[in-house]
Each structure stands twice: as structure tokens, then as C-alpha cells.
Length: 210
Image (tube, rainbow, N blue to C red):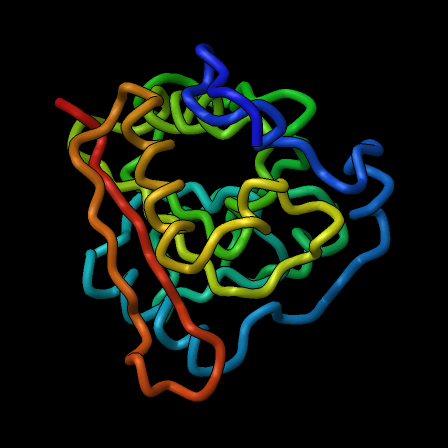
């Protein structure tokens, strides 16, 4: 990769993708499937329960299932496909919005008690802007929890992600938190054990700075 871009702090071309066409066309067909296996899904729900993710919550880049063991009091799910969002039984509100086309979140300041993003952070082409927007919409001390595995749609994942290891993925997301300027220090964890034979589940989260 080429020299670092001063605006993002990442190498030139890091956020390029093999398929640069608008995401709306790619996500138009509903995909009512899960993108990680049952063990990884359970690890997501266990993490949300452990962190006490409740109250008014934003599920970012979501779909037809949000993986909470117990749904929060009011869950807003933002995603790309209206049919998928309508099928989400935990959603109290849904918003169709393409964050790669417009990283601005259509919510007010300090609107949420928490935000989550499951197996989608690798598709963001403007992640630092998105993370800054998440910080704006969170109340002070509120967590933003990202989880991911080693599976993706390779034509839509950014090149920097595809060229990196699982451990490097964690560091990349931690840098998003740091570069966005709105969060305390990020926590990095592998949530499935090393001997786990299914999909690995990694998590990086941080709390909105006071």
C-alpha cells in the first residue's frame, strides 16, 4: 500500500473495494440468513448481556436479527434493506440508510444509551466519520460495541480489511474509535475461545467520552 493519507491516518487505497458500485443495488435482494454460526451468535448476545446493553439502543448496519438475548427497551435498527429490517422482531423502529453514501446519522445528539454494530464494520468506506457520528448520538458514557468474524462479502469489504489478519482487524477498529475523537480507550477481546471450531467472534468497544 502507498503512503499514509493525512486525513484518515490509513494508507492510500485502504478504503477502496473490488466492487465500487453503489451499495443500494448489492443489498436490494433480501438476505434472511445469518452471517455467522450459532456459537458466534451466542457470543454476541452474551457480550451484550455482560455489558448491560439496554434502554434506547441503535443497531447500526443491521438486518432481520439483532442477536440480543433480551431485546432492549427501544431498539432502532438502521440498515440497507427495508424487507430485512421489517422482519426484525426486536426492532421498535427501523431506518433505511446507506452510511457509505452518507455517514451522517439521522438522529439527534445524545439520543441513545448504547449502539452496536455486528459483522458489518468491515464494509464501511468512511468509518471515522461514521464513528464520530455514533459518538454524537450517544449519551456520555454510553458504549458502542462492534463485533466481527472472519467472514464477509469480499467484493464489498474494504481492501485494507481483506489484507489484514484477525488481530489486525481488531487494531483497525480500535483506530477508528481513536481517530473519531469521541470515545475513551477501546477494549479488544476475542469472545470465542481459541479452540473454538466454528466462526471466531471478536469485539472492540469503547464508551462515549464524558
